[in-house]
Image (cartoon, protein in one colour):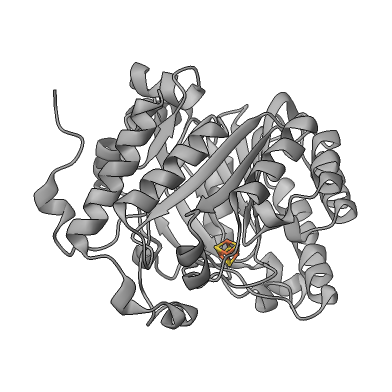
Length: 385
Ligand code: SF4
């Protein structure tokens, strides 16, 4: 059997792999004109996915690597949502008439910062602007501390059917050091609220490499998470980049595990999850054998986009909101990353693409190595042009 990991690489200092192509490889482009060209080149009935970035959280977790802010006033969220809706209507008009939305994903930040009313308004705008497929997946990343019964109920009523919860580590000491106090009881209540609201597809994230984490603590967290019986579990390594994410300076560096310990923690988490019947999906995801990601893995049809492994084989991913990335067969475009600037004015938003990358032969070659499904989709798109 081919080993899933090569320890000699796990212990070397190499660039952090999160996504391909990395956004650091993006450059200046005429985004509006490229997007228009790419939309004209799409097949007649493209599958479209939406990603909406909600860059707000109640408090900052010290390990956070996301593009988020702590809003001091609720008006900031309102202004941002107004801009998001304007851009959404504008971009919807650029799609072919027979495009259909198959996936909607709210990420962040913490989308649970939106009130039930704000979620209702936003979903109404989406339904007015885009034709949704009947069985569309509607998912949100949620902070378990923000999943009230009222919010879960509203999300269920609005058609949400998948939720991703960040668990990270369940030991008290680690939670204190990362500034995220979230006992297992809070996560359990969030899962219960979601399931009672009919949102039965649950993903969870756990982490290794956090301050004061040990193999025992990672194993304890992995065991506890399997008891909640999520469909998918992602196991992410903490990336310590305090020169880039200033709040990470609050992480005590002398408590961070070394490369060997990180590797052992990752292996320990994998072992616990596999013992509980979860199937490995790529190198950092696990899923129940009946889950679509696990099935696609067995069939060699798993997809990987710049955010990670997915079962979503879209033709177009439309990124809405600050920093979000759109993908079409022709390449990638990234929005203005600063939430305040994104929300400044409607005019600014409508020229919100700040960087991008046209997909050339080198990107196609590498994408085909990472994403087993890429060649099939690329050939379909080439035939459609
Ligand atoms: S809740 Fe998530 S996005 Fe918000 S600060 Fe914590 S890790 Fe970052």
